[in-house]
Amino acid sequence: VTVVVQDAVVVLYGALGVLIASRHGRNPIGWIFCFVAVSLGILSFASGYADYALYARDDSPPAAVLAAWVASWLFIPAVYISVSYLFFLFPDGRLASARWRPVFWAVSVFAVVAALTTALEPGRLYSFPTVENPFGVGGPFGRIAAGAKELTDLAAMPVLLVSLGSMVSRLRGARGRERLQLKWITYAAALTAVSFALSFLAGSLTGDWAGLSDLFFLAGVVGFAGIPVAAAIAILKHRLYDIDRIINRTLVYATLTAALASVYVGGVVTLQIVFRALTGQGSQLAVVASTLAIAALFGPLRRRVQGFIDRRFYRKKYDAARTLEAFSARLRDDIDLQALGADLVGVVGETVQPAHARLWLRPPSHVREEER
Amino acid sequence: MSGRASRIARTLWGLGLVFGAAGLLFGILAFRAPFRRGGGLYW
Image 1 (cartoon, chains in turn orange, cyan):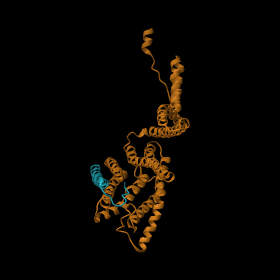
Image 2 (tube, chains in turn green, orange; image 1 turned 180 degrees about the vertical axis):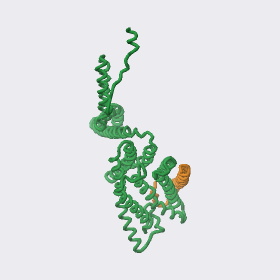
Image 3 (tube, chains in turn yellow, blue; image 1 turned 180 degrees about the horizontal axis):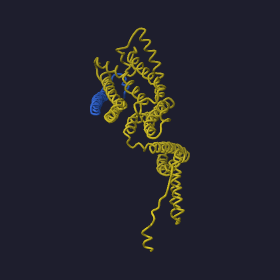
Image 4 (tube, chains in turn green, brown; image 1 turned 30 degrees about the horizontal axis):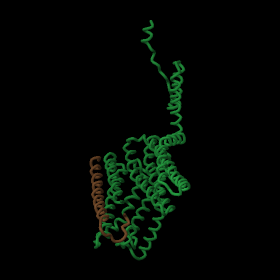
């Protein structure tokens, strides 16, 4: 399963890397994507071959140990470094400001140390516990490497969050087009980070219900695959202005799914209790009734949630829609052209909020000709 | 600049795809093996 996901990411990142690099050759973002594609491809090969040669064959060829070793550390440059560089350099290939330069270099040094110590740490490999690290360093240097690896393991998540912080600070300072570009990728990055965090949390809280943890992990993978898509959309400036709608819909459907799921589970549990009290045994009817209930609830509940989200987070747009509705209602009754014109200018000013609005009516000259 | 950059990027992507396909092949072989020794964390 991991190999399939990795290959899907190789296809996605590589395609977008080619797309961006050939249009914006000087922008490092495209090259970062290409690097992810190559290194994840090699990682997929190394882990697939090691898996096959170590676990599915009688003999273990020496190349299998080498492949297992490559697979044990390559994910650090392939995923970790590339993602944090992406956060630092998106969208124009430059750092957010000069103040981020030392942070950027610190993260780079940290990542190189993490990759080196993982590659040189003596003992068994983490991903392949049956293999002893062929390049593990003994003696005092080995102990230093092992200690440094403990540290980098601990700091890995905070360091990634720092690079995400660079992007968030850029988003706060950005206006107009750049703000929209950043919104796209911050959306994907936030989806990835929050989903992985929830997956970890769900895994440790509900140890026996792994389904929930897996579900969030899947959402995280989708988010990770969404990062290059979002970046490409932003850089190539396609469909840039749809991001607000997508965020809006995600809020709506996430709330809707949570509400319907709780109605379903609650309905099944309650009805089972009721049936048990009435007939002395559980019934499939509870499941059927709950399913019918959420099917009936879907439409009205979606409209309610959409209305709530629009009122709560998209106040301006909601008010504009209400103003236009009211104006079209007045339009039916009003016949005084002068009042209507003033009203129209007022509505335009309220909804579009231009610097200046003026209404120009073409004088009906041909009518006057006829009157004479 | 653009043509050369495009070629290099395409080559990198192609390498990734070839390696990725090989990884997929070995992954399937490992998954379909009739007997498997040890853990096999990846599945």
